[in-house]
Image (cartoon, rainbow, N blue to C red; front, side):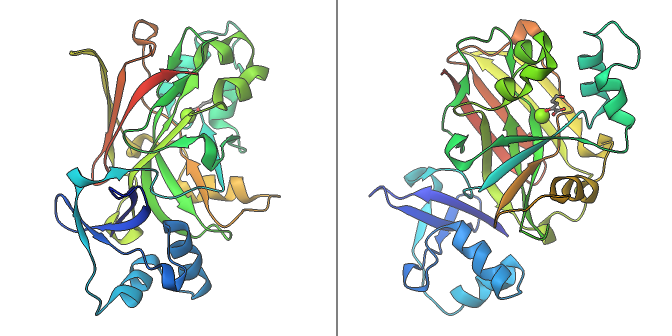
Length: 293
Ligand code: DO4
Ligand code: MG
């Protein structure tokens, strides 16, 4: 099941189920307290049902409005209470970051093989954007890059509710200047894109078989194109979820970004007006324009 949130032409927020290629079934049921995807997730968890079963249960037998994708404006598929990032989970990410540092067994090489993964706080819902909404590039960064990642939406006990694509937009020059600046390279306005929809687990039989691709467009030219597979993830998803949960309290909905396996060269550093396109097999395409913040 592919679930999303969108604004109808009257600007009201709606919850949708992607039916065929470009048709959305409007499953917003305010009389049942189901007015966003968060409320669907919360009620499904409380009822002990998986999301598709819960959606089928509450919507079954109703005649629901339908929309064409072209009529509506998509937004984040859910409003994450918290977004956590996982770092250096692909060899390519480790090698790129490590080559900047002279000493052997530097922090990136060590964390790649350490028992404890790199986990960092990334964003709140207010810092996240959905498909078609601008992502941010800090005005004080000269080398900001997209980090195209598989994101997992989890409940308070680490239950996997679904998968989506994420862009962990990061100011790599700020991280490079001093690793202690990592929060400033990662957390700022519009630093995280999510979407285009939440794909529930029964539609993702192998989360390690997803091909993730990224393209950056500047005007009409494609200035970068790269690809990876989640098969290259060094750490499995349950390990990452466990690391975020350890000694922690998870709110109702947490998005966990699993790390980037695509590295954009400095020549393709993001500039205002660029368009970043991230696609994932079975997960759709997440497209965002860059805006300076
Ligand atoms: O170590 C810094 C951040 C790494 C990261 O975000 C990633 O590998 O995706
Ligand atoms: Mg990342």
